[in-house]
Length: 334
Image (cartoon, rainbow, N blue to C red; front, side):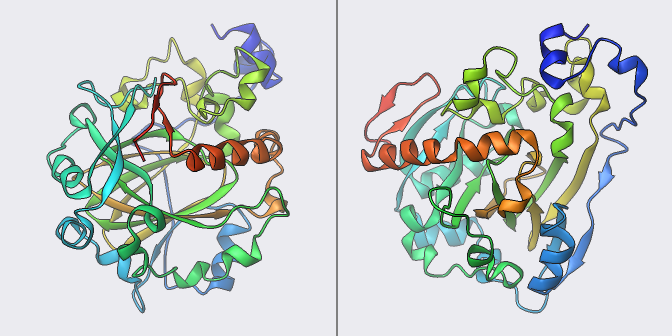
């Protein structure tokens, strides 16, 4: 049975599951994500960004240069760059995010990445690596996709909530389920094939957001645990224990197998996780979610805490320190 405290936080009672018939989906009958080619910025904003709809974009007419970055190119152009790397240990990524951040040259991290063939064998991964900060040579080659060319100015939030757009490199076989704190993102797959599985923000009630059951103060937890799920997705959708997580069977996954050269728009507050078919390179372009799209309750909560998180993040970077999962500080990590 689902705990009364959890149902109470959701605004539900014990009769919810019996009184509401909700269509459920498995990994085999998930909702497909639409594909479009060469959209104009106006078309993309009107039909997808403003409506909060995920979509796969294929840029055939003028693909940006970063869509051609493969392992050999990254190693040749930026292989000597020292970068922070997630170290998951021998067990690979887990729901508890048991990682530390270590430093190595990008070329070494790429060698590790090319050997991974399952979440369990992913010890090291490059995640959320700022291209402008750590890979300036590549930053000069990056071109903002045409369909979001003016997104930063069109979607700029008032101070102190606004943030600049960010381009980040991901070289990771498995990326655990999470959602972004008021940031839109276009995930550009430069190399390999990768499965993306998304859930609508309304499915938050079925995905067991971490810590919300325990304390209202968890909403202000800087380690972002609140943006993750208690469910161990790294074991596979068919391995989820429905006796332990009974609400999950009511969640509706959206699924797509992204190919090299394609991009996926992931709207703000949509849950998502990824599993690769082979070693992959993803370049993510983040920018602020328009203020009018912050209407969901958990969205307003994250908007309110945004200045607090910005302040801490900026001071951590200024101090050139990075916090590991267990709150230890590794002073030379970045």
